[in-house]
Image 1 (cartoon, protein in one colour):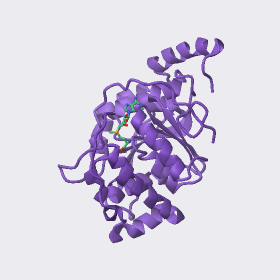
Image 2 (cartoon, helix red, strand yellow; image 1 turned 120 degrees about the vertical axis):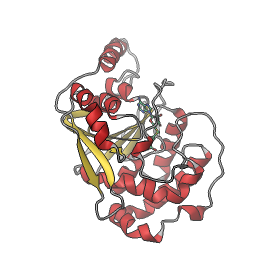
Image 3 (cartoon, protein in one colour; image 1 turned 180 degrees about the horizontal axis):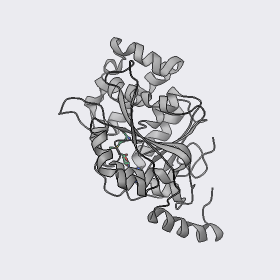
Length: 297
Ligand SMILES: C[S@@+](CC[C@H](N)C(=O)[O-])C[C@H]1O[C@@H](n2cnc3c(N)ncnc32)[C@H](O)[C@@H]1O
């Protein structure tokens, strides 16, 4: 996979991107105790204790599920879990208390989404953070090509290193920028589009549809990992989803009989090619820059 102008091996990071304020969508994460730390959203330093390696060992009761979801890539998944619980915690990308529940709350829950993704699909993961769910999907499904879209430098640095360390550079690339920048190509990289756009804990469904559907090919789909209130979100935001070109959102339970509880995934097909004003304007701005010899792909 090529990495030119991408934050990946051999690539040059695009310049800093302002991230519009977005509340972390904690409801997308599987249930846990109320005091659970959430993945952080700031990009400043946040020193943390490194958990003991034993804390990320795959619990015996989850071993069958992990084998089912990762197959012969289970060792790779374990290496990623270790990376998240050590480097990811030290860099403040994931809370130290997440380590003991790394497998059920993060890896298995994300891997369960894979059943909604067709063989050989191109996947764009919006707001990857430390690689959830995008890196997990790339580990579980070597047939996929995955682009991790993340605006914050501290996170993309981690992602680039993780991709290299896990030996995933052939199937995974990292784009530093916002979803609308990825869709418009306004940073001089892209524009990107894919069969499937994934997101977890990034934004409510209305904003997510506006950001993610422009990244999907026609007939492609958004898969949003959501929480128990997924149907309420759909009821509230169905109009906005339709205005963004999406079809009727459908709730799927993924990993039934494998993980408990199953993952809740909201699926929206891109039925119409609606280009949001922000992407349209950014695309217009990007065009003269290319003609004038600006950064191209
Ligand atoms: C709460 S974190 C979730 C990270 C990861 N998906 C997870 O589940 O752990 C939200 C992420 O979305 C990113 N983000 C926020 N706005 C974005 C945008 N417009 N485009 C792409 N990513 C965005 C943030 O930088 C942050 O890394």
